[in-house]
Structure formats: C-alpha cells, structure tokens
Length: 495
Image (cartoon, rainbow, N blue to C red; front, side, top):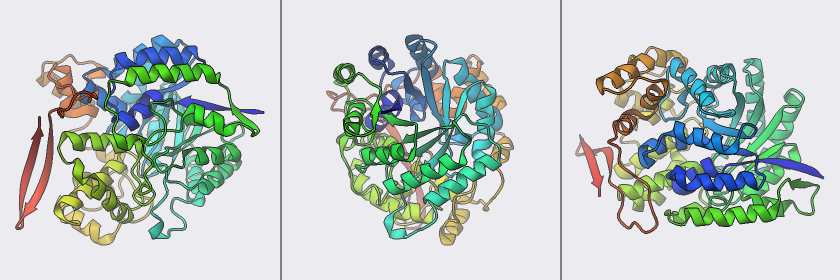
C-alpha cells in the first residue's frame, strides 16, 4: 500500500480561506504543538495573505510568528510559505532587491521551503525569484497555477493539460532551479480529468525523483475528487487541512481524505485517532472567531466565476467591514466577464484581487465605466504577459483612463526603474518616520505600505473579527465613482 504524503495547510491557507487570514498567533500555536505531537511533519505556516494580514489586522509581526513556529516544531520539520513571484507577499510587484530580500529574510526566520507561483504563468516572474530562493539556501517549490475557465468560453487550449505541459517545458528551458513542483488550483475549479492528465504529463517531463505536490480547494465541491485524480496520476503529496479550517473554501480535511482512500491501494500515514483529538482541540481554540457562512459552503457558481478560496473570505470580510457585503453575489457574477476579457490569467492572488476589484467597479458604476488601476495595469502588461491577449477594446479603455501604453517589458526592469520601489526608497520612509532601519522593517514597509508603517509606529488598529462582536471593525474603503460624467473620490468609514 502506497503512503501518500501531505502538507497540513491549516495554519496558513486554512486561516486565509476561512477567517480572511485574521487569526492571532497565540491562539494557534498550542494547536501547532498538538499537531506535531500527533505526527504531522509538514506545515504551511506563512506567506500569501498571512504576511500582510498580521500587520493589517492582527497587529503582530509575521517574522516573530515564523520564529515562534520554528521554535515549536524543532529543526527537522518542513515549514513552508507561499510567495507570488515578483509580487512576493503583496499585491504590488517589487524591484529585484526586495524580491531577493524576501528570500533571505524568510530563511533567517526559520522557513524551509518557499512555494513560488506567478498568477499569469509568465515564466520571467518565476525565474529571478526562484534563483533568489535557491541562493538563500531554501527549497524552491515552483508552481503551475491551475484554473478552470468559465465553461461558456469553450476554450480548448488555455488552462488545459496541454497548456500546463507547455509551461513546464518553458520552466525547464529557462533552467530555473527548483527542488519540487506543485500544481496549485486556488479556486478549486480545474476538472479532475485535467488534473490527472497534467500530472501524468509532468511525471514524464520532470527529472527522475522530482517530487510533485497537488493543491486545491473545496470551494466548488471537487476537492476530494481532484486529490484522487492527482494521486492516481502519480502525485507524491497533497495539501490537506484540519477542521475547523477544512472543506468549503479551504482544503479537504485530513480525516476526510484518509476515509476516502480506505479500500484503495493508497493511504495517508496518520494516526487517525490522534488527528481527531487535535481537530477537537483546534475547534475549541477557534471557537471565539467569527467564521463566515460562505467559508463552509460549496458554491456551484465558482466554476463560472473562479474566485479562489483563499481570497473569497478575505474579500467578504472587507465587504462586511465596509457595509458592502450585500453586493457580493453580484460582484462574483460579474467576475465571469472580467476573467474572460482579462487575458485568462489564473484567478489567484494578486490576479484574483484584480478581477474582484474590476468586478466590483463594474457592479457599482456599470460595465467598464471605470478601469481599476491594477486590472488595467495587468491587461496592459505591467505585471507580466497574460496567457492570451486581453480584449482589445478593454485594453484601449484602460490605456486612456490610466494614461499608460501597453508594454512587453520585463516587470523586474520596470520595477527597478521605479524610484518609489526598492530598499533605498523604503529606507527613506523609515527615516522620515523615525523608525529603526532593519532588513525586516524595510521589507514590511515595501510590502505593507502605510499600514506596515502604522504597525511599526504602534498606530495600527485591531481588525480581528470575533463571533460575539456584533459591531464591524473600523476600516476605510476608497472608491472612485462617476456621476454625470464627473469623477468623485468616495470614502466610506465603517465603525
């Protein structure tokens, strides 16, 4: 019987998918200890939205959190984080010196492996970051970012097994150093048949012994079936989570997957009774947090408007903060057209947020009346090359509104030439705010902006949502509206 390895994503993607990433470190560290004692040996612990969220909402230092986790698990257990290529751990892309600093700092603070993806699957965005991760002494897990396109598009190549196979060929041709490869479906919308064919093809192409890992979400109800397809195709490892941060917008549960494998030639190497006890303890520790109903719901609209599980509750939490949650269903519906006209970038952060921002704008102001900055920059090439050419009319509107011409220039070169990016620029920000200049503070400033500076100055506001707290946390939502042809900056403050 073959034992399938798994990574426990509870303490990163689980928190991000179910609680909008707003969980205090002190509440989960005892559960991490229990999970290690139960035999779990491989954890996703940070990166993705769980970097910014600690500064934005929890008023905690992400580097302190990583140090604490390493102290608990010891030296031998794999601690893994998620990176967004040239965007590292934020929505904005960064200059080369910040991309390199990211790798060095995460190595310094106890991380073993960085899973590195680019939502546009522009291999240039994986190349330099991959070199930095490897040079820092970390394991580099390179990613093929998966997504099921809305069925109405009737697209046969993009986001097919053939498309993903061609991307692996590009990675190999570019000679990017990597230790393992992950197929990552953030929205849980890839049909199991494409998962199977993609991994079968990858196994033939990759050097012998390359570890293949598979990641999906259960947002559309396909988590277990896609995991089974990955296993049968030859994946060595899958991503799973523990209740109460499993299922729904998160990964399939460890125990659910163990049960699903019973009677097959595969199994998970767990003591199921011990895991059951950890999950009970975990539920107790999370009891005080507000768990959005949509986090534990299978949503059939997601394959038509692919919103990632890890972004869904982050967006709904922000919409609750801003008293705009009533618009959520319509925004998700409008994402279908935004994805279709945006060049087929994978709906995973930051691109999923660009899709959401534009869908929100279309919902509030009318279709394509206002192009959001990041969506516009994406379709014009400022974050890299989209898989296919975006809609020409939307590109024209974006160019006119943003005052930018389309570009094919490498995003790293664009960012290196930007005087408001990089180490020196962020040093100056720290100096102007009388803050200590450390590598950590430079990186916090670069990736978290004014909210990072507010944290460092002790001026940040707690934004954690607890179940018994009926009043929304104070937050500010900015949006530009057009009335009778005239633009107005709208600021909504919720208390």
